[in-house]
Amino acid sequence: MDPENGENPPRLRPDGTPLRRGWTTGACATAATKSALAALLDGDFLDPVSITLPGGQTPSFALAHEALGPGYAEAGIVKDAGDDPDVTHGALVLARVRAGAPGAGVTFHAGKGVGTVTKPGLPLGVGEPAINPVPRRLMTAVVAELAAAHGVEPDFAITVSARDGEKLAEKTWNPRLGILGGLSILGTTGIVVPYSCAAWIHSIHRGIDVARALGVTHVVGSTGDASERAAMARLALPVEAYLDMGDFAGGLLKYLKGHPVARLTISGGFAKITKLAQGEMDLHSGRSTVDLSFLAEMLQERGLGRQDVERVTAANTANEVLTIAAAAGIALADAVAERAREQAQRRVGQASRVDVMVVDRSGVIVGESG
Image (cartoon, rainbow, N blue to C red; front, side):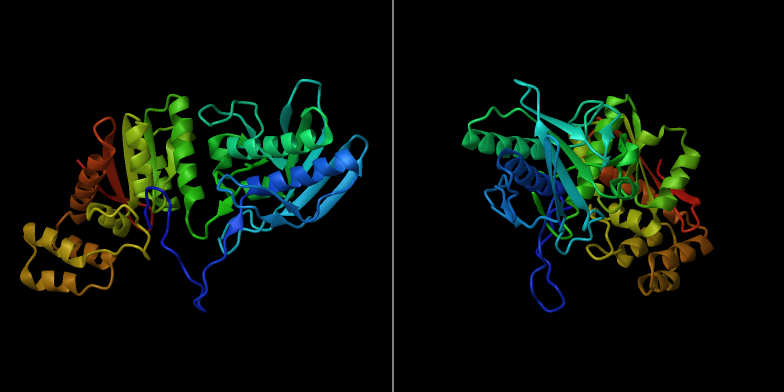
């Protein structure tokens, strides 16, 4: 995987067949809009309904819901994320369309389960429904197409909803980004690539944008909950400063290079910070490994005896190496943190000052750079 842009090499199922791709919430909302508008204009829902995605693909969607009411039509599509472990897989995405004010064009509204933007820094203004720009363009295009075919002006109000969206949003970055009340309607290509992790990296970027817009000058990229809690206990920073970096150090550092914040703290477990010290930018256990010879060399430089160095090269885990170093009185976690800081600083450039903390499994800070 390229941790800077979220693209994985192709993956296969156990039977050797390719993983199945899926569709974004934005694609589902667009298809639901097209079907609902068709029903509003001539009384018949399109089922299945086809749309054209930014890349030219023309998927078809089956309706899971349709309703006609006084002055509106509503259609719903169940999101299919393919083989991706997407939190919104199976969510019912609904679009209700009604006539808008003359000359207003297409307007967007958040229904139940779709969030509203409450903080600056996102590609939508404060107070706007969390329907991202590309899905808005796609929905506007289908409205223009159908309105032209029926000889009417493209003045329609679209309300997008998501069943159980409030609960699903609690499992996303939305609350921290200031998107309250539900999910975001997302998608730049309309396609969900299994295990691409593009959504995670997108969330890291939006977290940086929000922090910058709020004037936050010190952000923290954490590899997990324990390391984030340790950083929170140490640093008096607003919640918007904390970025769930996960394994995507490269995605964080590359974006910060172009969108700098004065100070960056990276907080993580010993094994993941060791991989960063080695120059790895994807810290996932399946895509990078701790090089025990790297740690052995560091310890030998600091006076560890030959017999213990051999124990290091034969160790089962990075934490076993840390135990060997502690018994010898060598502050290995500090040394690893400093090497990791150097790697991160090199990639982020000089506009942001980097420091690194190493946190053990119990949430105690056991090493720091500088």
